Length: 277
Length: 120
Image (cartoon, each protein chain N blue to C red):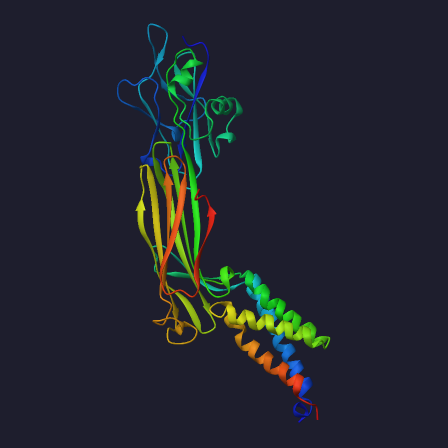
């Protein structure tokens, strides 16, 4: 019997979107009904269910879709179940879970230890008179690293630079890249220049998969190759590359690696600017 | 000529001018930065900009010591300032140290002249 109003918050993530949809499964029966969360306003009826003989409220599979917002933010869509077995839109917001209305968010936070938890059907059902559904929560994470080649002045003497960033969304079972990019930098000093010969994305594993990743590479040299100080390497020109790879895992973990090849002045270093943990 | 008659003073003044120019350029590197070329992955076009370099605090400090040493006629302070500037030029020679190589050589020459030359 439905005696209380119940809420389902379905979390969707900006970037994955148009292709990735998140679903809240109530009772799995016939095909999926698609709810376009962007077309609905608060108070709208998203979908109507049916009462069974024993008073349970049954829905077909429901899929919620939303458009990407493209900046790594999380888009939240909350449906409340009323006494007439209808799912009513009762909140929409962008940002962290905690940014949502307290009366919706707090019960969810009690059920899930963190945003990546899947609220189990049994756990929800136990306190809600046997109504069956699961809520899948996702979150997104960014990893950002900076790789550089330095000279005899040490870490403060950065000569060529490479950045790489990966933003991915994860559910606990899969990860998907929502955005990724990289850049390279050289510099001009007196009569010589640290030239960027090429800046490439060498590999992308977009997911959905248990592990997603992106790799980039920057190719550099010192010009003019035959003049000091560029002629200090053998062969002349300090031709080298800097590489970065960022990984995202379904669990929400992320790692970053880096490497280099060729002639460098003294060493290669790396700074983690965000994530990579 | 007056320069020849007073080489010591002339060398000191020239050293001070060079040190002041080095200090101003170090400040420029510190707050505006050196010219850099940034290329986005997949692009063949670079964007020119400026990137501040915190390491420029060393040549600025060296040049400041030099100026104060020359102004107060404290040779030890002048030489310490020169050594900071020269060491920075040598260590950072592949990067912004390159900007201070010639000023360092010129300042060394001026300091030596002011130390050993005799006014006529």
